[in-house]
Image (cartoon, rainbow, N blue to C red; front, side, top):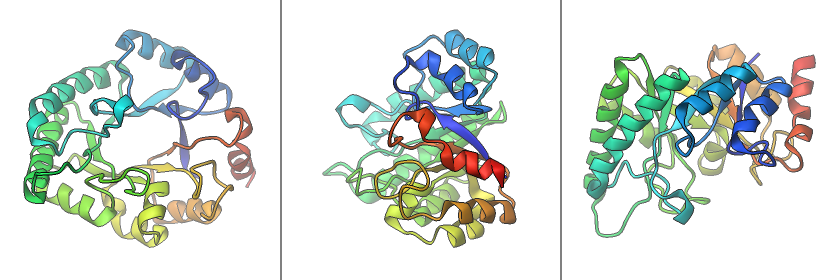
Length: 260
């Protein structure tokens, strides 16, 4: 059966961030992920995870000013220095949290810069990040986001993301496959996962439409979970969804899966 991690940037939002680790553990999760831990001291976040008994399996590199709509800076040539400073910061956090992977968000496509320059900038930054984290045995992930919810996002589909990883040419670069984003942009989830499994470092989920918990939309999650077992996926699946009610009341799908 797949292993699930609670995404603390989406779940248990009625609690302060550092209290969400224990809330996830109380609901049976053995692992957590989140977007950005940087506003808290690393030792406080590490202590919250340790005291709750959960592993931290994923977080993101600094991604610009999230509050004003930025969604990463890795493709932006004028912000290379800022991205690389963020890589060093994330590496420190990953060490403190014993986190095995860090996710890269490419950013929004700006006006006035060619696709070739944006692509080359992203590839160079992926190489830099991969090299910076390789010595500690950590993975760097690249995540496509759907361009319906995030217009102008530079990497919005699986095939272009894989081409960028291939161009970067580092063995610790992998794809973060978000089932929700992939369903919005391309569908064909089972075949895409089967064909590209060696390059999938992490999976996230939410149903579509609405980005709520499994069972609220069109995606056949029981089939997908069986499929992931059948093709041999061994990684974590992050529950990155907006619960349709209280977080604690949104895990019926997981309870049912545990009983099968």
